[in-house]
Image 1: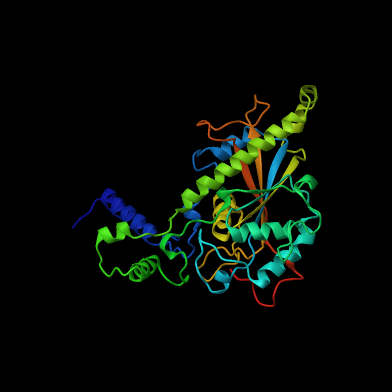
Image 2 (image 1 turned 90 degrees about the vertical axis):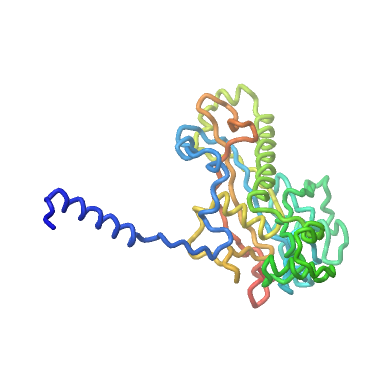
Amino acid sequence: IKMTPVCMLVVFLALFIQMAIAGAPGTANVETDPYPPSSTGSSISDDDDDHHDAIENKKLAPFLVRLHLIRHGETHANVQNIVLGQGDSPLTDAGVAVACSATAYMTRLHFWRTYCSDLYRAHRTARIVLGLEDADGNVDPGGKTASDGIDLIVDSHLRELAKGAREGYLKKLSYEEAVALRRNEAGDTSNSNAAMMTMETPKLESIDDAWNRVKHWIDCIVEDASDDYYSTIELKDEQDNEDTRDSGSDPKIYDVFALSHSALIRTMIHKMVDSELPSNYATTKEGSLSIPNLSRTIIDVRPYYDNDSSHPSKKKDNIGPRWTPSLFRLTDVSHLSKALPKGPPYL
């Protein structure tokens, strides 16, 4: 078949494009991490695609909220590799001992606010770490009371992700296997949808559901920090020092202690600072970012202004202030160096 030069050129280009597509790197997407970067995003860019461009045209606030995200101490369920979710388990003796070892360091820090999850394992750990009770449960052993500046706020926004039917069962079981076990234990051997609907199972929460509730908590804290900052500044001083709102100035830091749980902390890290994570971060056996017991991750949350505004701008849908996060420290355990066991902490 005789082909004109134009036809030959078209065929050549088509073959070249096909080969390029077939051999393009990165087309395979094997997700071993339950929190892959593709499923996450920054807290702001999720609903504002031009967030990064917008930041360049705005001024950062003269203050920031520094979140100290700390995981609770080791529990009996951790040792037994049991899924807890919003169920609970007491701390082990080792968990209590390591929490006590963090007290000296943590009580030297001056937190603007202190929070913990409303689940017992987190509440108990927070009270020990902050010196509000000792290993034996004695209250206020060192005279640290609310009047001394430590007012621990118990907040359900910081509780662990609800993990549904898997709660109370071994981590190695799939969700379907956990459902089947629950049904067997309830004496139901049928496979009917009606039986599934009537079977009592713990609440199941998606990553986005958990993120939405904890993001609301962050927004509220940022708003409170803003109110506190501007309530302490005279209007004249603010007008005379407009340049203090420049991004090059050192901001006032509001340190916030938040004792929570591995999956929720992991969700916050991936949603807020996923792009800042090192490529070689430590993982669990399941491939997720490792959050060791009593490790501390620090994320800075800094509001920003519209150019013509003197206060942090609000989102267009009025659900919270605009802010940008940055990673300060990831799963640090240096404050526990004298108390960690020889082996790795339970994950």
